[in-house]
Image (cartoon, rainbow, N blue to C red; front, side, top):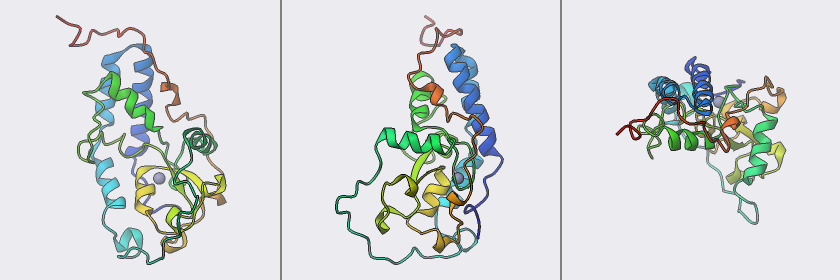
Length: 216
Ligand SMILES: [Zn+2]
């Protein structure tokens, strides 16, 4: 049994640190530092790792080469996902960390805020290649322990916070099928990491450095 499909590479922690610095710079009105940190966090190894885990099935990572065969459980009146406030409660409970690999993750709104204020450094393309590699990999999502299509509900004890690779790499597999231990067997790490919720409602002070748009 294992905690996650593939242990995260060091760039996960580095990206979280750089995005936190970018967030603090943005809030302080230091546009240049914000952009510099965002560009530094845009590390290709994150995209490559994400693809390796969440791309085609492999014996090495998924222990099998075929998706599980199952009969989808009817939706009936099960909502597909919890609402925004319920999702935030799950992420707070989990210390804004992926409950599989323990990596620090960031709320999805962080990407929107960065892109709004520093679009050239916070790429938000529609493909893995054109989306900022850190924001595309360590942005948090809510995962179902028992996958939705296999009957999982949105009860809090079936929901947890996941990074991109752990979420999309597991897909519709159950924990048992991938020989993963139940993340709830381990307490969440609570070290004060805020998942960049500090950016919610961000209104940066006047940029200390004049932007190219403001020049001329
Ligand atoms: Zn993870």
